[in-house]
Image 1: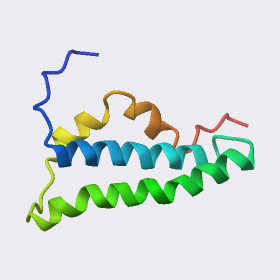
Image 2: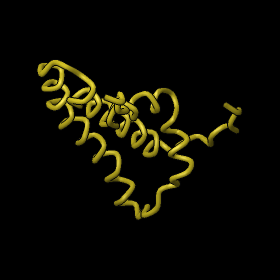
Image 3: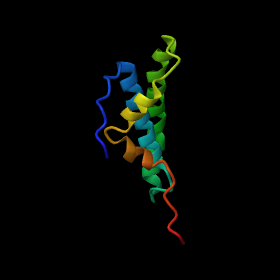
Image 4: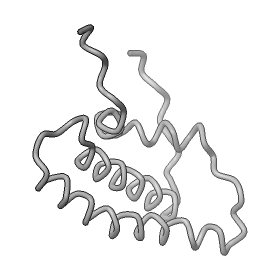
Length: 100
């Protein structure tokens, strides 16, 4: 994979948005019945999801109140790939069919 140029430092709100989204995606992945086999871990993740979703909302609210109506999607998408956003988001997608 080619080396990407460094990202500009995110604002505090952007950093909280990135962290909040990764937390929500992590909980969704843990609660995903296609990726885990026990109900108890899924239940715990679903319960934690409520708190994580509220934190994500709280990260977006000040941006909205300040009139920030646009997100810098390409930059934020790159930031979401670091440090383990790819692993976390992969757990939210359906696993590939095994051919059977």
